[in-house]
Amino acid sequence: LAACTGDSGQSPAGTTSEVRTIEVAMTDELRFVPDQLTVNVGDTVTWRNTGSVAHTATDDRGKAQDAANAVLPEGAEPCDSGNIAAGEEWSYTFQTPGEYTYFCIPHELAGMVARLTVTES
Image (cartoon, rainbow, N blue to C red; front, side):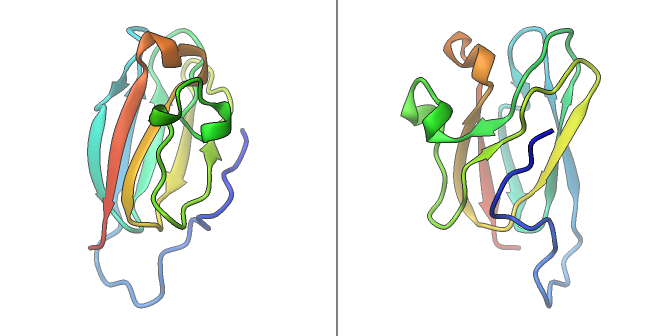
């Protein structure tokens, strides 16, 4: 699967808080579950395709049909998981705090859009 640029996947130096992995399901109902999530800098989010059709977790305005569905905080790089097949997963570690809105490329117009807030721990 395609890797995102920007976040290195490494925890910031000097971090003492516990790093967590949070799972988001991608469903046949064309939803991210949960569709609103708050995580800390350094946490990893894993998107798991629990449905039967391919999905993406994409935060790239250049790939969005509606730019409002691809929001990144200042300093964060665009991101795209590529197609995640049924039963597969993809993970991303967030290093840039702020508000993110992301979507599934094939199901964006069906409303498969979610929001994520990354906070300083």
